[in-house]
Image (cartoon, rainbow, N blue to C red; front, side, top):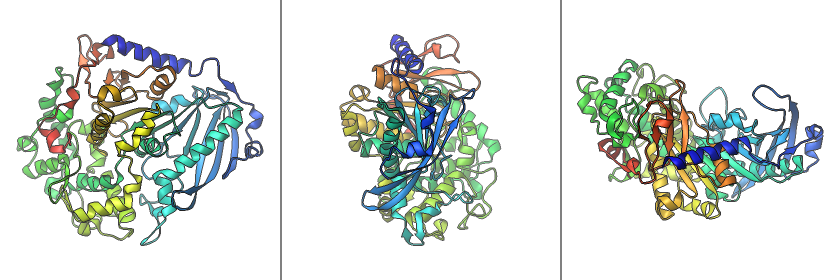
Length: 549
Protein backbone atom coordinates (compact mmCIF):
# COMPACT_ATOMS: atom_id res chain seq x y z
CA UNK A 1 0.00 0.00 0.00
CA UNK A 2 2.67 2.43 -1.09
CA UNK A 3 0.10 5.11 -1.99
CA UNK A 4 -0.68 5.57 1.71
CA UNK A 5 2.99 5.90 2.41
CA UNK A 6 3.34 8.74 -0.10
CA UNK A 7 0.12 10.36 1.13
CA UNK A 8 1.62 10.35 4.62
CA UNK A 9 4.83 11.91 3.35
CA UNK A 10 2.85 14.59 1.49
CA UNK A 11 0.90 15.41 4.63
CA UNK A 12 4.06 15.80 6.67
CA UNK A 13 5.58 18.02 3.99
CA UNK A 14 2.44 20.16 3.96
CA UNK A 15 2.57 20.45 7.75
CA UNK A 16 6.24 21.48 7.71
CA UNK A 17 5.74 24.07 4.98
CA UNK A 18 2.50 25.54 6.32
CA UNK A 19 2.36 24.88 10.06
CA UNK A 20 -0.50 27.31 10.58
CA UNK A 21 -1.35 28.74 7.20
CA UNK A 22 -3.16 32.07 7.40
CA UNK A 23 -2.97 32.32 11.20
CA UNK A 24 0.67 33.10 12.04
CA UNK A 25 1.15 35.85 14.62
CA UNK A 26 3.86 38.50 14.64
CA UNK A 27 5.14 39.59 18.05
CA UNK A 28 6.26 43.08 18.99
CA UNK A 29 9.94 43.15 19.96
CA UNK A 30 9.07 45.68 22.66
CA UNK A 31 7.48 42.86 24.65
CA UNK A 32 10.82 41.08 24.97
CA UNK A 33 11.82 42.59 28.30
CA UNK A 34 11.68 41.53 31.93
CA UNK A 35 9.32 44.38 32.72
CA UNK A 36 6.89 43.60 29.91
CA UNK A 37 6.84 39.85 30.55
CA UNK A 38 6.54 40.32 34.31
CA UNK A 39 3.56 42.54 33.64
CA UNK A 40 1.59 39.52 32.50
CA UNK A 41 1.57 38.45 36.17
CA UNK A 42 1.54 34.71 35.59
CA UNK A 43 0.94 32.89 38.88
CA UNK A 44 4.07 31.69 40.70
CA UNK A 45 6.39 32.78 37.84
CA UNK A 46 9.37 35.13 38.13
CA UNK A 47 11.01 36.33 34.92
CA UNK A 48 14.75 36.56 35.44
CA UNK A 49 15.92 37.56 31.94
CA UNK A 50 14.61 38.38 28.49
CA UNK A 51 16.85 38.97 25.49
CA UNK A 52 16.13 39.42 21.81
CA UNK A 53 18.34 37.07 19.80
CA UNK A 54 18.99 38.19 16.24
CA UNK A 55 18.21 35.95 13.28
CA UNK A 56 20.95 33.59 12.12
CA UNK A 57 21.36 31.13 9.28
CA UNK A 58 19.76 28.48 11.51
CA UNK A 59 17.10 30.34 13.48
CA UNK A 60 14.79 33.34 13.10
CA UNK A 61 14.81 36.25 15.49
CA UNK A 62 13.36 35.19 18.83
CA UNK A 63 12.93 36.36 22.40
CA UNK A 64 14.77 34.15 24.88
CA UNK A 65 13.00 34.21 28.22
CA UNK A 66 14.39 32.64 31.37
CA UNK A 67 12.40 32.30 34.55
CA UNK A 68 11.54 30.31 37.63
CA UNK A 69 8.25 28.87 38.80
CA UNK A 70 7.20 27.82 42.27
CA UNK A 71 6.01 24.22 42.02
CA UNK A 72 3.47 22.99 44.52
CA UNK A 73 0.91 20.31 45.27
CA UNK A 74 1.01 16.54 44.65
CA UNK A 75 1.29 15.83 48.37
CA UNK A 76 4.77 17.30 48.93
CA UNK A 77 6.20 20.69 49.81
CA UNK A 78 6.93 23.50 47.41
CA UNK A 79 9.80 23.43 44.98
CA UNK A 80 11.24 25.70 42.32
CA UNK A 81 11.95 24.94 38.66
CA UNK A 82 13.81 26.98 36.09
CA UNK A 83 12.71 27.19 32.46
CA UNK A 84 13.75 28.70 29.15
CA UNK A 85 11.07 29.84 26.72
CA UNK A 86 11.96 30.83 23.16
CA UNK A 87 9.41 33.02 21.38
CA UNK A 88 9.98 33.47 17.63
CA UNK A 89 9.11 36.76 15.96
CA UNK A 90 6.64 34.95 13.69
CA UNK A 91 4.63 32.43 15.71
CA UNK A 92 2.73 29.50 14.21
CA UNK A 93 0.30 29.28 17.17
CA UNK A 94 1.99 26.14 18.46
CA UNK A 95 4.00 25.26 21.55
CA UNK A 96 6.53 22.44 21.82
CA UNK A 97 8.02 21.35 25.14
CA UNK A 98 11.34 19.50 24.79
CA UNK A 99 12.27 16.91 27.40
CA UNK A 100 15.62 16.38 29.12
CA UNK A 101 17.97 13.44 29.56
CA UNK A 102 19.44 11.44 32.42
CA UNK A 103 18.87 13.18 35.74
CA UNK A 104 18.16 16.49 33.96
CA UNK A 105 19.15 19.35 36.27
CA UNK A 106 20.28 21.94 33.69
CA UNK A 107 18.61 24.22 31.19
CA UNK A 108 21.22 23.08 28.67
CA UNK A 109 20.13 19.46 29.06
CA UNK A 110 17.66 18.73 26.25
CA UNK A 111 16.86 15.22 25.04
CA UNK A 112 14.55 14.97 22.05
CA UNK A 113 14.68 14.16 18.36
CA UNK A 114 17.58 16.24 17.02
CA UNK A 115 15.73 17.02 13.79
CA UNK A 116 12.77 18.33 15.75
CA UNK A 117 14.97 20.52 17.94
CA UNK A 118 16.58 22.06 14.87
CA UNK A 119 13.28 22.60 13.05
CA UNK A 120 11.05 23.98 15.82
CA UNK A 121 12.06 27.66 15.87
CA UNK A 122 12.38 28.02 12.08
CA UNK A 123 8.86 26.60 11.77
CA UNK A 124 7.57 29.20 14.21
CA UNK A 125 7.06 27.10 17.34
CA UNK A 126 7.28 28.62 20.79
CA UNK A 127 9.79 26.32 22.49
CA UNK A 128 10.21 25.56 26.19
CA UNK A 129 12.30 23.29 28.41
CA UNK A 130 13.00 23.00 32.13
CA UNK A 131 15.68 21.81 34.56
CA UNK A 132 12.88 19.81 36.33
CA UNK A 133 13.36 21.57 39.66
CA UNK A 134 16.95 20.86 40.61
CA UNK A 135 20.54 21.60 39.64
CA UNK A 136 22.71 18.60 38.82
CA UNK A 137 26.20 18.96 40.27
CA UNK A 138 28.44 19.13 37.16
CA UNK A 139 31.41 17.65 39.04
CA UNK A 140 29.80 14.25 39.57
CA UNK A 141 27.31 11.95 37.85
CA UNK A 142 25.77 11.21 41.25
CA UNK A 143 22.27 12.71 41.73
CA UNK A 144 23.28 14.43 44.96
CA UNK A 145 20.20 16.66 44.78
CA UNK A 146 17.99 13.74 45.80
CA UNK A 147 19.17 13.76 49.41
CA UNK A 148 18.97 16.57 51.96
CA UNK A 149 21.17 14.31 54.09
CA UNK A 150 21.91 10.57 54.13
CA UNK A 151 18.61 8.79 54.74
CA UNK A 152 16.62 12.00 54.14
CA UNK A 153 15.23 12.34 50.61
CA UNK A 154 14.20 15.68 49.16
CA UNK A 155 10.64 14.63 48.34
CA UNK A 156 9.81 17.91 46.60
CA UNK A 157 12.81 17.65 44.27
CA UNK A 158 12.02 14.00 43.50
CA UNK A 159 8.37 14.65 42.64
CA UNK A 160 9.40 17.66 40.56
CA UNK A 161 11.76 15.43 38.60
CA UNK A 162 9.19 12.65 38.32
CA UNK A 163 6.38 14.80 36.91
CA UNK A 164 5.33 17.96 38.77
CA UNK A 165 7.75 20.52 37.31
CA UNK A 166 6.97 19.69 33.67
CA UNK A 167 3.24 20.08 34.30
CA UNK A 168 3.60 23.33 36.26
CA UNK A 169 5.93 24.83 33.66
CA UNK A 170 3.52 23.76 30.92
CA UNK A 171 0.56 25.49 32.56
CA UNK A 172 2.52 28.67 33.23
CA UNK A 173 4.25 28.99 29.87
CA UNK A 174 1.00 28.47 28.00
CA UNK A 175 -0.25 31.66 29.68
CA UNK A 176 3.00 33.49 28.96
CA UNK A 177 2.94 32.50 25.28
CA UNK A 178 -0.65 33.56 24.75
CA UNK A 179 -0.17 36.86 26.58
CA UNK A 180 3.05 37.61 24.68
CA UNK A 181 1.42 37.13 21.29
CA UNK A 182 -2.10 38.16 22.32
CA UNK A 183 -3.21 34.98 20.60
CA UNK A 184 -4.41 31.46 21.33
CA UNK A 185 -2.26 28.32 21.22
CA UNK A 186 -3.86 26.04 18.65
CA UNK A 187 -1.79 22.96 19.44
CA UNK A 188 0.74 22.00 22.12
CA UNK A 189 3.17 19.09 21.87
CA UNK A 190 5.70 17.35 24.11
CA UNK A 191 8.79 15.90 22.44
CA UNK A 192 11.36 13.87 24.36
CA UNK A 193 13.78 10.94 24.21
CA UNK A 194 15.17 8.78 27.04
CA UNK A 195 14.13 10.57 30.26
CA UNK A 196 12.33 12.94 27.91
CA UNK A 197 10.44 9.95 26.50
CA UNK A 198 9.39 9.00 30.02
CA UNK A 199 8.26 12.58 30.64
CA UNK A 200 6.18 12.53 27.48
CA UNK A 201 4.29 9.39 28.49
CA UNK A 202 3.94 10.74 32.02
CA UNK A 203 2.26 13.88 30.72
CA UNK A 204 -0.29 11.79 28.86
CA UNK A 205 -0.89 9.54 31.84
CA UNK A 206 -1.15 12.16 34.60
CA UNK A 207 -2.18 15.33 32.77
CA UNK A 208 -4.15 14.32 29.66
CA UNK A 209 -5.20 17.90 28.90
CA UNK A 210 -1.70 19.43 28.79
CA UNK A 211 -0.78 18.38 25.24
CA UNK A 212 -2.53 17.52 21.99
CA UNK A 213 0.34 15.35 20.81
CA UNK A 214 3.19 13.43 22.42
CA UNK A 215 6.50 12.12 21.07
CA UNK A 216 8.18 9.49 23.24
CA UNK A 217 11.53 8.18 22.05
CA UNK A 218 13.45 5.33 23.73
CA UNK A 219 11.52 6.04 26.94
CA UNK A 220 12.98 5.14 30.33
CA UNK A 221 9.40 4.44 31.33
CA UNK A 222 10.11 2.05 34.23
CA UNK A 223 12.67 3.76 36.47
CA UNK A 224 12.45 1.07 39.13
CA UNK A 225 13.23 -1.87 36.85
CA UNK A 226 15.77 0.17 34.87
CA UNK A 227 18.06 0.46 37.90
CA UNK A 228 18.29 -3.32 38.19
CA UNK A 229 18.64 -3.92 34.46
CA UNK A 230 21.44 -1.35 34.28
CA UNK A 231 23.33 -3.33 36.91
CA UNK A 232 22.76 -6.57 34.97
CA UNK A 233 23.88 -5.01 31.68
CA UNK A 234 27.18 -3.76 33.09
CA UNK A 235 28.09 -6.60 35.43
CA UNK A 236 27.47 -9.25 32.76
CA UNK A 237 30.99 -8.51 31.52
CA UNK A 238 32.53 -7.64 34.89
CA UNK A 239 34.37 -10.95 35.52
CA UNK A 240 37.79 -10.62 33.88
CA UNK A 241 37.28 -13.69 31.71
CA UNK A 242 33.87 -12.43 30.52
CA UNK A 243 35.14 -9.07 29.29
CA UNK A 244 34.92 -8.75 25.48
CA UNK A 245 37.64 -6.51 24.03
CA UNK A 246 36.41 -3.85 21.64
CA UNK A 247 38.52 -5.45 18.93
CA UNK A 248 36.22 -8.52 19.02
CA UNK A 249 32.93 -6.62 18.75
CA UNK A 250 32.95 -6.42 14.91
CA UNK A 251 33.33 -10.21 14.79
CA UNK A 252 30.35 -10.60 17.13
CA UNK A 253 28.31 -8.28 14.90
CA UNK A 254 29.34 -10.27 11.82
CA UNK A 255 28.25 -13.54 13.42
CA UNK A 256 24.90 -12.03 14.36
CA UNK A 257 24.39 -10.65 10.85
CA UNK A 258 25.12 -14.02 9.27
CA UNK A 259 22.26 -15.49 11.28
CA UNK A 260 19.76 -12.61 11.25
CA UNK A 261 20.29 -10.37 8.24
CA UNK A 262 18.27 -12.40 5.77
CA UNK A 263 15.29 -13.05 8.03
CA UNK A 264 13.44 -10.09 6.52
CA UNK A 265 14.02 -11.47 3.01
CA UNK A 266 16.87 -9.12 2.10
CA UNK A 267 20.58 -9.35 2.91
CA UNK A 268 21.49 -5.67 3.28
CA UNK A 269 23.55 -5.41 6.47
CA UNK A 270 20.54 -4.45 8.59
CA UNK A 271 18.44 -6.51 11.01
CA UNK A 272 14.80 -5.46 10.86
CA UNK A 273 13.74 -7.57 13.84
CA UNK A 274 16.47 -8.71 16.27
CA UNK A 275 13.85 -10.50 18.40
CA UNK A 276 13.48 -13.00 15.55
CA UNK A 277 17.16 -13.98 15.69
CA UNK A 278 18.33 -17.39 16.88
CA UNK A 279 21.96 -16.80 17.82
CA UNK A 280 23.20 -19.05 20.61
CA UNK A 281 26.14 -17.22 22.22
CA UNK A 282 27.77 -20.57 22.98
CA UNK A 283 27.85 -21.26 19.22
CA UNK A 284 30.36 -18.40 18.93
CA UNK A 285 32.86 -20.48 20.94
CA UNK A 286 35.70 -20.81 20.08
CA UNK A 287 35.70 -19.09 16.69
CA UNK A 288 34.69 -15.67 18.05
CA UNK A 289 34.39 -15.80 21.84
CA UNK A 290 35.66 -17.81 24.76
CA UNK A 291 33.16 -19.74 26.87
CA UNK A 292 33.15 -17.09 29.70
CA UNK A 293 32.65 -14.31 27.15
CA UNK A 294 29.73 -16.20 25.61
CA UNK A 295 28.20 -16.62 29.08
CA UNK A 296 28.56 -12.88 29.65
CA UNK A 297 26.80 -12.15 26.36
CA UNK A 298 24.01 -14.58 27.22
CA UNK A 299 23.51 -12.86 30.60
CA UNK A 300 23.39 -9.48 28.86
CA UNK A 301 20.64 -10.76 26.56
CA UNK A 302 18.63 -12.56 29.25
CA UNK A 303 15.48 -11.18 30.86
CA UNK A 304 15.58 -10.17 34.52
CA UNK A 305 13.55 -12.41 36.84
CA UNK A 306 12.88 -12.74 40.55
CA UNK A 307 13.96 -15.77 42.57
CA UNK A 308 10.75 -17.58 41.67
CA UNK A 309 11.45 -17.08 37.98
CA UNK A 310 8.78 -14.40 37.49
CA UNK A 311 9.55 -11.85 34.78
CA UNK A 312 10.69 -8.43 36.01
CA UNK A 313 12.20 -6.70 32.96
CA UNK A 314 13.25 -7.63 29.43
CA UNK A 315 16.80 -8.34 28.38
CA UNK A 316 18.75 -6.66 25.61
CA UNK A 317 18.76 -7.07 21.85
CA UNK A 318 21.37 -8.34 19.41
CA UNK A 319 23.27 -6.52 16.71
CA UNK A 320 25.15 -3.36 15.75
CA UNK A 321 27.22 -3.38 18.93
CA UNK A 322 30.16 -1.65 17.23
CA UNK A 323 28.12 1.39 16.18
CA UNK A 324 25.06 1.74 18.42
CA UNK A 325 26.52 2.35 21.88
CA UNK A 326 27.28 -1.08 23.35
CA UNK A 327 30.87 0.13 23.62
CA UNK A 328 30.61 2.62 26.44
CA UNK A 329 27.18 1.57 27.68
CA UNK A 330 27.83 -2.06 28.60
CA UNK A 331 31.63 -2.08 28.61
CA UNK A 332 34.59 0.28 28.70
CA UNK A 333 37.67 0.07 26.51
CA UNK A 334 39.46 -1.92 29.22
CA UNK A 335 38.27 -4.42 31.87
CA UNK A 336 37.50 -3.43 35.45
CA UNK A 337 40.55 -2.97 37.62
CA UNK A 338 38.97 -4.63 40.68
CA UNK A 339 35.73 -6.55 39.97
CA UNK A 340 34.94 -7.06 43.67
CA UNK A 341 35.36 -3.44 44.73
CA UNK A 342 32.47 -1.10 45.50
CA UNK A 343 33.59 0.82 42.42
CA UNK A 344 35.07 -1.88 40.15
CA UNK A 345 36.36 0.56 37.54
CA UNK A 346 38.23 2.69 40.05
CA UNK A 347 35.90 5.37 41.40
CA UNK A 348 32.61 7.24 41.24
CA UNK A 349 31.71 8.03 37.65
CA UNK A 350 34.08 5.46 36.19
CA UNK A 351 33.01 2.41 34.23
CA UNK A 352 30.40 1.78 31.56
CA UNK A 353 27.43 4.13 31.46
CA UNK A 354 25.06 1.39 32.59
CA UNK A 355 27.08 0.91 35.78
CA UNK A 356 27.36 4.64 36.49
CA UNK A 357 23.60 5.09 36.07
CA UNK A 358 22.58 1.94 37.94
CA UNK A 359 25.04 2.27 40.81
CA UNK A 360 24.27 5.93 41.47
CA UNK A 361 20.55 5.31 41.14
CA UNK A 362 20.54 2.54 43.73
CA UNK A 363 22.74 4.46 46.17
CA UNK A 364 20.72 7.69 46.00
CA UNK A 365 17.20 6.97 44.77
CA UNK A 366 16.75 3.57 46.38
CA UNK A 367 18.99 3.18 49.44
CA UNK A 368 19.26 6.92 50.30
CA UNK A 369 22.91 6.22 51.15
CA UNK A 370 25.77 7.61 49.01
CA UNK A 371 28.18 5.12 50.61
CA UNK A 372 26.09 2.01 49.92
CA UNK A 373 28.16 -0.80 48.33
CA UNK A 374 26.12 -2.06 45.37
CA UNK A 375 28.73 -4.66 44.45
CA UNK A 376 28.68 -6.34 47.86
CA UNK A 377 25.23 -5.65 49.27
CA UNK A 378 22.65 -5.25 46.49
CA UNK A 379 20.55 -8.49 46.40
CA UNK A 380 20.92 -9.24 42.70
CA UNK A 381 23.06 -11.88 41.05
CA UNK A 382 23.22 -12.24 37.30
CA UNK A 383 19.69 -11.96 35.96
CA UNK A 384 18.02 -12.82 39.28
CA UNK A 385 16.89 -10.21 41.81
CA UNK A 386 15.23 -10.65 45.18
CA UNK A 387 11.57 -9.81 45.69
CA UNK A 388 12.52 -7.49 48.56
CA UNK A 389 14.74 -5.50 46.22
CA UNK A 390 11.96 -5.27 43.63
CA UNK A 391 9.53 -4.01 46.27
CA UNK A 392 12.03 -1.42 47.49
CA UNK A 393 12.66 -0.21 43.93
CA UNK A 394 8.95 0.25 43.38
CA UNK A 395 8.43 2.11 46.65
CA UNK A 396 11.31 4.49 46.05
CA UNK A 397 11.03 5.01 42.28
CA UNK A 398 7.55 3.96 41.29
CA UNK A 399 6.24 7.55 41.32
CA UNK A 400 8.45 8.25 38.32
CA UNK A 401 7.24 5.32 36.24
CA UNK A 402 5.10 6.00 33.17
CA UNK A 403 4.69 2.39 32.04
CA UNK A 404 1.00 1.82 32.81
CA UNK A 405 -1.07 1.72 29.59
CA UNK A 406 -4.28 2.01 31.61
CA UNK A 407 -3.32 5.50 32.70
CA UNK A 408 -2.97 6.60 29.07
CA UNK A 409 -6.54 5.68 28.16
CA UNK A 410 -8.05 9.04 29.07
CA UNK A 411 -5.51 10.91 26.95
CA UNK A 412 -6.24 8.71 23.95
CA UNK A 413 -10.00 8.83 24.57
CA UNK A 414 -9.85 12.62 24.38
CA UNK A 415 -8.25 12.41 20.94
CA UNK A 416 -4.62 12.94 21.90
CA UNK A 417 -2.03 11.55 19.49
CA UNK A 418 1.13 9.64 20.41
CA UNK A 419 4.21 8.82 18.35
CA UNK A 420 6.61 6.42 20.02
CA UNK A 421 9.93 5.27 18.60
CA UNK A 422 12.74 3.10 19.88
CA UNK A 423 16.13 2.05 18.53
CA UNK A 424 16.22 -1.72 18.10
CA UNK A 425 19.92 -1.68 19.11
CA UNK A 426 19.47 0.54 22.17
CA UNK A 427 22.18 -0.50 24.63
CA UNK A 428 20.78 1.54 27.52
CA UNK A 429 17.03 0.88 27.58
CA UNK A 430 15.79 -2.41 26.19
CA UNK A 431 13.72 -1.86 23.03
CA UNK A 432 11.56 -4.72 24.19
CA UNK A 433 10.24 -2.51 27.01
CA UNK A 434 8.53 -0.30 24.43
CA UNK A 435 7.16 -3.40 22.70
CA UNK A 436 5.70 -4.59 26.01
CA UNK A 437 4.01 -1.25 26.51
CA UNK A 438 2.63 -0.90 23.00
CA UNK A 439 1.32 -4.46 22.83
CA UNK A 440 -0.44 -3.95 26.17
CA UNK A 441 -1.82 -0.65 24.90
CA UNK A 442 -3.16 -2.39 21.79
CA UNK A 443 -4.87 -5.06 23.91
CA UNK A 444 -6.42 -2.33 26.04
CA UNK A 445 -7.58 -0.24 23.07
CA UNK A 446 -9.11 -3.19 21.17
CA UNK A 447 -6.35 -4.05 18.76
CA UNK A 448 -3.63 -2.50 16.64
CA UNK A 449 -5.97 -1.05 14.02
CA UNK A 450 -8.01 0.84 16.61
CA UNK A 451 -4.92 1.94 18.52
CA UNK A 452 -3.16 3.20 15.40
CA UNK A 453 -5.82 5.87 14.94
CA UNK A 454 -4.32 7.52 18.03
CA UNK A 455 -0.93 6.00 18.83
CA UNK A 456 1.83 4.59 16.62
CA UNK A 457 5.15 2.96 17.43
CA UNK A 458 8.13 2.98 15.09
CA UNK A 459 11.07 0.65 15.74
CA UNK A 460 14.37 1.75 14.18
CA UNK A 461 16.63 -1.09 12.97
CA UNK A 462 20.23 -0.65 14.05
CA UNK A 463 19.70 2.55 16.06
CA UNK A 464 21.13 2.93 19.55
CA UNK A 465 19.79 5.02 22.42
CA UNK A 466 18.07 7.99 20.76
CA UNK A 467 20.73 8.10 18.02
CA UNK A 468 23.77 6.36 16.48
CA UNK A 469 23.98 2.97 14.81
CA UNK A 470 24.60 1.74 11.29
CA UNK A 471 21.06 1.96 9.93
CA UNK A 472 19.01 4.97 8.84
CA UNK A 473 18.43 6.77 12.13
CA UNK A 474 17.77 10.44 11.36
CA UNK A 475 14.09 11.24 10.93
CA UNK A 476 11.53 13.90 11.82
CA UNK A 477 8.72 13.31 14.28
CA UNK A 478 7.46 16.82 15.10
CA UNK A 479 6.30 17.49 11.54
CA UNK A 480 4.67 14.04 11.43
CA UNK A 481 2.86 14.68 14.71
CA UNK A 482 1.66 18.12 13.63
CA UNK A 483 0.40 16.72 10.34
CA UNK A 484 -1.53 14.09 12.29
CA UNK A 485 -3.02 16.51 14.84
CA UNK A 486 -3.63 19.45 12.48
CA UNK A 487 -4.57 17.71 9.22
CA UNK A 488 -5.57 14.22 10.40
CA UNK A 489 -2.84 12.68 8.23
CA UNK A 490 -1.38 9.85 10.31
CA UNK A 491 2.23 8.83 9.62
CA UNK A 492 2.17 5.57 7.68
CA UNK A 493 5.97 5.60 7.90
CA UNK A 494 8.83 7.87 8.91
CA UNK A 495 11.55 8.27 6.31
CA UNK A 496 14.96 7.88 7.95
CA UNK A 497 18.45 8.50 6.59
CA UNK A 498 21.96 8.01 7.90
CA UNK A 499 25.26 9.81 7.39
CA UNK A 500 26.17 7.70 4.39
CA UNK A 501 22.95 8.73 2.63
CA UNK A 502 21.10 5.45 3.02
CA UNK A 503 17.36 5.94 3.48
CA UNK A 504 14.51 3.67 4.50
CA UNK A 505 10.91 3.94 5.68
CA UNK A 506 10.36 3.14 9.33
CA UNK A 507 7.07 1.26 9.41
CA UNK A 508 4.49 1.47 12.14
CA UNK A 509 4.57 -1.52 14.48
CA UNK A 510 3.97 -4.42 13.89
CA UNK A 511 4.92 -3.82 10.23
CA UNK A 512 8.41 -4.37 8.90
CA UNK A 513 9.90 -2.62 5.87
CA UNK A 514 9.74 -4.83 2.76
CA UNK A 515 12.23 -4.57 -0.10
CA UNK A 516 10.49 -4.43 -3.50
CA UNK A 517 13.51 -4.06 -5.77
CA UNK A 518 15.79 -1.28 -6.90
CA UNK A 519 18.63 0.42 -5.04
CA UNK A 520 18.61 -1.22 -1.61
CA UNK A 521 19.90 1.96 0.07
CA UNK A 522 16.95 4.03 -1.15
CA UNK A 523 13.67 4.45 0.74
CA UNK A 524 11.80 4.19 -2.56
CA UNK A 525 12.85 0.55 -2.80
CA UNK A 526 10.98 -0.36 0.37
CA UNK A 527 7.30 -0.35 1.37
CA UNK A 528 5.16 -0.81 4.46
CA UNK A 529 2.02 -2.95 4.31
CA UNK A 530 -0.97 -2.88 6.65
CA UNK A 531 -1.36 -6.66 6.65
CA UNK A 532 2.27 -7.22 7.71
CA UNK A 533 2.85 -8.34 11.30
CA UNK A 534 6.40 -9.67 11.06
CA UNK A 535 7.66 -7.60 13.99
CA UNK A 536 5.55 -9.85 16.21
CA UNK A 537 7.81 -12.80 15.35
CA UNK A 538 9.91 -14.06 18.24
CA UNK A 539 12.92 -16.33 17.84
CA UNK A 540 15.31 -17.90 20.32
CA UNK A 541 16.95 -14.59 21.23
CA UNK A 542 13.67 -12.76 21.61
CA UNK A 543 12.43 -15.51 23.91
CA UNK A 544 15.66 -15.35 25.93
CA UNK A 545 15.14 -11.60 26.39
CA UNK A 546 11.47 -11.90 27.24
CA UNK A 547 10.51 -9.84 24.20
CA UNK A 548 7.00 -11.30 24.10
CA UNK A 549 6.56 -10.97 27.86
